Image (cartoon, rainbow, N blue to C red; front, side):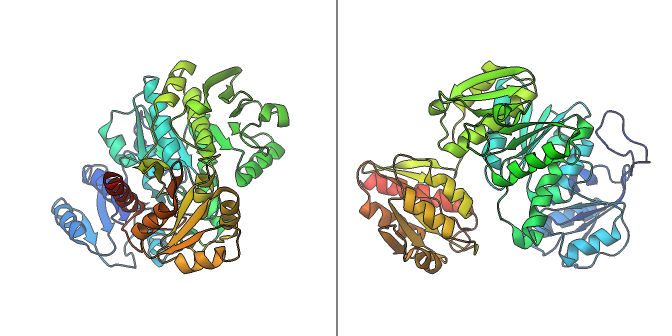
Length: 488
């Protein structure tokens, strides 16, 4: 594709896309297909959509797409024909026969994120944010800070609208993209101006096949930073990310600059002092957030003044602040934005007060590492934690140890209840309660809670035993809390 004629003023958009295959008809697949339908007959010679299993909405969409000239196929595991470009949906694993068949039939396979980046204006800026946990908050906060600074910024990707829809709308100067490992796995030329890696811990291993493959997909966000003169923001409080920083320093000649957040000693570590780094982001001795970058030190705001709780959100705030400062935001705009940003739904979100007991919705904590973060968010208060849902089968020893130190009690519920109860059987946590459903778990927690206590739904599990998604689980939890607050 490098030798074909490109559209002037775009990142890497060929004048002629040729024969295009869309793999999957989820949110991003549908958006990419709509974009290609609009140029079918001009830039696109032929458009085929391998849509997977038929659903009511997909069948209705397919009828309209066929009328516009697309070929839409359902339940086809084998891709026939040849294509110049395949745009793969993130839900389809690279290791699946479906993906492999599409790759064999296509000259190139990319994700919708890369496709959108290629089609975007050459003058536009891209921030790509990835990590096992914290992506959504950091993406939303970065966008908020850039808007405070006067930029026409949009939060896209896994948050907000799809990247290609935002590019098609044509009214954005800075795209702040929450990028998953699924999306990054199928990137080749994607070169954001700022790339953020927050943390890497085991997750989505069934999709990638191994932790090594999962991590490799995450690190692809740095692959082309040198081409864009980009900057990496790397959270050195995370062991895996810190190891990558050591690798970069040992290698030398890295074609991009980077800002480490904290270090091995925690968020208070200034990597300029400890490792001789050129830049750093950290929590100062007085409790203020500090970003040292490009010869300037920005003393921003005090952590106690943030509306988002927990040490992990201080890390997220530093990552977002670093992104905004790199892209030209002033200290004043960044500071004001940090102070006005409110917690996102389902992420240690205040849910209400029941008889003096503060309840928090952390339904987004679908893995152990996310729950470990929540356990330290309320110190010195030790919360009563609701744990359970659909088990991901991960090691529970770190969770048990953290609860022994930081939880007043735990309530185990849902499909995962028995394994969680077994894990806590010989622990120092007391009491350990059992409940069938999330509602029963909330009532069990409230039955032992006293005025001033904290109850937090931070399940460390997927939601699919009772709910369609973590958002539904969180919404139901908030309604249950509101109902009990009204009766109190």
